[in-house]
Amino acid sequence: MEFQQLLYFAEVAKQLSFSKAAQSLHSSQPSLSKAIKNLEEELGVVLFDRTTRYLRLTDDGEVVLKYAMETIAMSRDLQSTLNEGRQLKRGKLSLGLPPVIGSSFFPRMIADFRGEYPGVQLRLVEEGGKVVEQLVREAKLDVGVVVLPVDEEQFEVFPLAERQLSLIVNSSHALAGAQTVHLAELKEEPFILFREGFSLYDRVRESCIQEGFEPKIAYESSQWDFIGEMVGAGLGIAFLPDTVSRKIDLGSVSVIPETIPPIRWDLAAIWSKNHYLSHAARGWIEFIRRQQVRGN
Image (cartoon, rainbow, N blue to C red; front, side, top):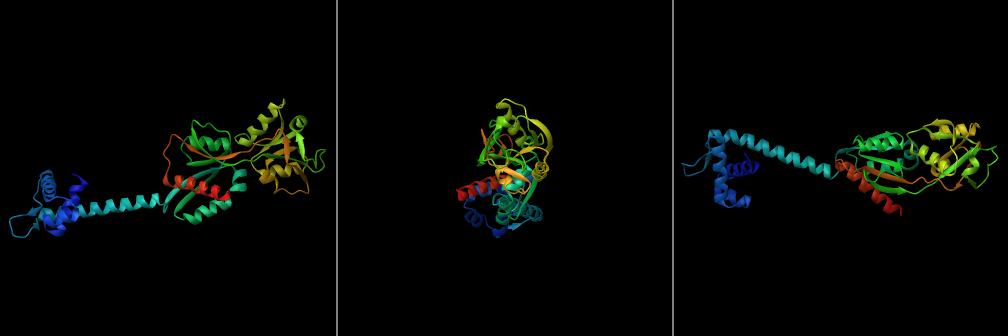
């Protein structure tokens, strides 16, 4: 039984005329008659009484019509629901954000997205960049925002921002007030880093190693404000994104905006090349593309 047969049958039952139904359906009458005949043979019943002057449904035809109308209505509801998904009137989006990134860039953007697409359910997952990558790779997140670089054989990448990390020292530190510092000067300093699993952990450590030393890690944390407080307490030095360092209480710390060489902090949205991307996820990607164009 084909859906088109039910559509043809329902229209003939509505018009009680093969010729009028064919005209309404923009089909030929022979094609329509053949489709109804095939449906009758498949079901093993007679749907229309053709022995009288006027076409009328048989008892079996009345039963089949009831189910045909329900099937057609369900199909239209399904199409309507799918259209709503394509138009982002509904849907679900899971977005991964490292905490330091989320607090710096995305509250306003998320609010604007929710304002434009209130029917989309947005689930935020705050994890370090490496964890976000893994969750996107496993299709447990639709889209993630991470620090570059990532494996572009596995992920589609949309660059969002180019930034660098600032050095944060205690206000009584010998380097306090400086505008630049060479990384090599920091080899004896105790470092306070974001914990492993955060991309910033790798970025700082790898940059130090390239300058010839392994950083002495005194403490690790997942919270940028706590890292700032530990620096303020004289427990070590830290690297924070420039957008975050502006929020720290400058009474107890000093921000050195540039290092030589700079430690890059370039952000990108990523999604898997190997998994289905929902309408909501596609909508979010298109939304951030538009936001970046407006920002430029």
